[in-house]
Image (cartoon, chains in turn purple, yellow):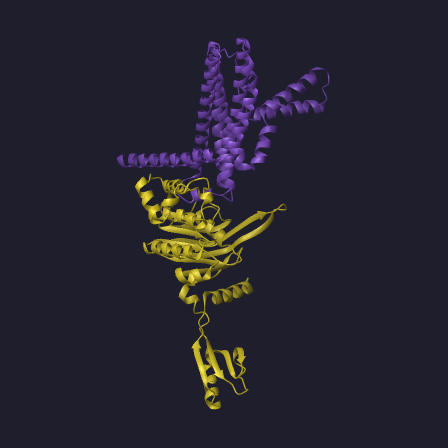
Length: 281
Length: 302
């Protein structure tokens, strides 16, 4: 009994050490990846350009609108960037074949993949906190009340980034990063939701041909199958514009987290299977 | 230490998914403590065989066992295993120190800073520890790979073309380090094209052609494959026996090879004709000669 416990303890310790080593290496990758740094600079530049007119505004209402706009833009960029974190950490290691150095040691693909996910999520969390802090600073600077909506949006973005990171990590194990990005942009639930709505509206307006009904069904199934970025986006839309959160709305980030974790677990399992089945690591 | 039985590995490549047979029934045995070299032409299947031993590839059929277990990606049985790949397969974004620490930590134990610093000092990497691997020479990268072997008392080391692109000084240093690791009791499996290196380091060799082992033996046995030939240099008076091989005339002096079974005939010929013999010696064979002979034989068999 004691022997088994000791063995389990040793295994746990080994696992923690392996995770730690891989996460630290991935952080070094993020710090030094020119591609990610270039993306970050472009996003910062675009955010800067968006916020430029606000320096010439004196009205409180306009300041609030600017804050809301800048914060939404930054969160959108954060989401893109988080996807990039998951995509590049997998694709770059696969493409330069450095995983040979990892998998020829007692470090399994399961541990490596988990560490890649954890490190991408950790960086995403850090960036979310930085953006949230900058929004709070802007609120103080413009003498605006610090709205709870800022925290809500930050939480919502972070939770969405968890699912997106896992989804893009999966795509990166299956295909070239360019193909993975194209696939993620074309095959996303929001696009097929809109397409489904369009098909239904055309059918309601009198055109109920077989082809259109078939397309409507197809779009519906794609919408159900593909992962959603904001699982409760329709219900939380108003928070993004008003930055006000009603008491009952705080449950949505929790529901989203449940969805994101389930999606992440599914993507992780598939990515692990794909990684282990690869002929050329 | 490693047993491979009838390994077959097939890939599908290209737009038409053409079937490529990388291994065709490769069988070999590497014993504990061997310095084993895999030799063969480009595309013979050496790297594929090594990847099968490392668990990086799953053979289409056949059986492979490393230290009594079937190899797999990141297997917990790789505690004493290290692999030094060809140049580009390192984490190039890490610094020398970070990479040494990272590769050493992948064995599941945290390595103290002092141990890392001592190893870097010993391998002459201390002054470059903040340099990223992307900016390091190949020799320095190989030393980083070697550092993990020295930290963890490697039992089984795989080397994939380890000296390709190294300068002569680095090759010599590298060779010395390999000897040291081998003397500590490690089994080393090396895949290389440099036959002179094998002659200096390996004790057993497998020659691979078309995905199968065409010869596997002790190095000393492979080096005596052609012992039946003798090199002779003598002065000729015009008549040259037809059993002489590779005849080369330099004025009156003739250089040639004599098959062992005709050596007494040749000696009788020179004695009766009164021809002075300047040299008669056992033909020394290099691994290169043996290699070409084996490859030629192997190809004709295949």
